Image (cartoon, rainbow, N blue to C red):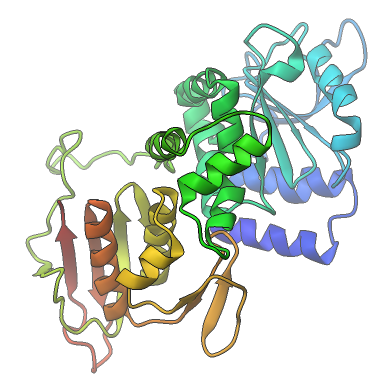
Length: 383
């Protein structure tokens, strides 16, 4: 899904998405397909769904149904940039859609901004909004995880998405404000004079008229990381001969894979990551794993200076795209390219720094120069 989101960002950047139909077809349906919805089956993804056919001719742009019996999600699409000035009217429109056929979720989107409403709760419709995502401004990994947690078909079907929505709505005004400003606080923490993340967040919230101490902000950041939705994985049916994996168990160790020392894994040239995790963050390449570790460390309050002192990865807290550096807006860091061995060493340092488990399963390619062509290796470290 990361590739799709990056391609959509590029389309928005080029101004290719010019009207409401572009948003519904090229953005919404494409994302829905990534999330497991069969966009070719009108019983599942119903375009121009008549909410009350016996009363009037109003139709919602997209209705999602896990079963043909009732709608689970209504999605109202608008042209890019056409939400904010008309938001009260659009919310009123969605409220009316839910009069006879109440969907669990209602969503307003212009393709970039996605506003999620839990239709089943009481109060004014505007108060039912529990989550706002923006695929242009927020880190791609965060957008991906939130989409999968809230809108993936399996998560809607099994009730997990609804439970998460209810949990979001229970947040206090102070907590919601801290969540809304967390991304901005991360940016502040990466700029001169490099304040610690909790301090930056507390300052931004206080500027909005709500008093928050640095300790409160630090506690919120820690709690936010724990309840941050992880990207759900659709389970595959186990093979009859496969051993049962206990809930909460450590990653299985493949007896055929080489077990490597995290402090000195050896020659990792010509390797490809098959499965990787640091703490709760997952990724499937060396570079993505390092970025995941950095993102996790920043969310826990470590400053740029903290990371710079402890890691051997070359980083700059500003946009820079020369000498092998690449700017990552989600981290507010420019990072220079590195080898697989450097990645492994820095992942070990990050894991120790955060007291987080590290698990990497990888393989050597068939290149003659590879240390163990065609074999698998595992790096596993836990506190």
